Length: 185
Image (cartoon, rainbow, N blue to C red):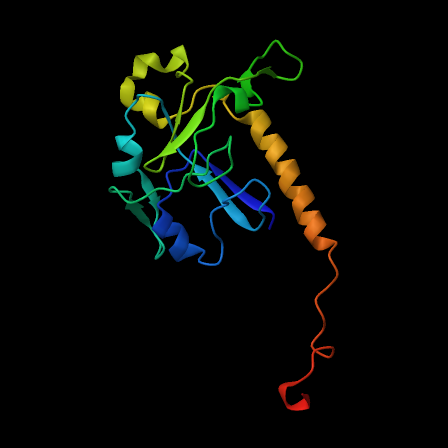
């Protein structure tokens, strides 16, 4: 596995550890065999729905609620679990749905910053006006027609693939026949 991108999912870190104990969160931009996850909330907005009442899979099957458990957050601008926030100038580009564009999207550079705090990814982008009629809780729960980190994710996937391939091209470890047995020493 190169990496698992679990975007806009409120995932408690204890659930990840219980369900896939051998797969850590990605703590750097070129690491492989790890998980990238975040749940975003508007900067200055309330993230209590995700941190308190989001339904998540339970390790034993069925569902559980987050109830204040620490959530996984890998910052999509710095690609780290903890540390500094990423400013707008680090954002390669958001993708906005655009039906009149042959590609279906427009790329908007420097669209938002990102800061992991208490398990939530706080961003600067406001929800789409289409969602205003449903109320503030809906705005916190559902993303708009904008992927704020589209170009960042594309670049990071490529970087992780290159890192994975570089690791794959390393010489193979010695086979068990090449390693002296303890009794042969």
